[in-house]
Image (cartoon, rainbow, N blue to C red):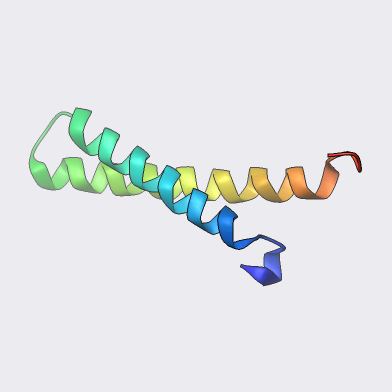
Length: 66
């Protein structure tokens, strides 16, 4: 995570976001249990990637006074 310029709290927040999204999708999806778990895992992975990309962009282009 340090090679990307992310702090420890960014990793913790990413895991929290991914876990919440995974659980919500798995809980609300239709279908068999296995399908719900796979759908939740995919959605959690996508949300984690989006979180990392947006955090990197914010850290790179934020104003100096932040």
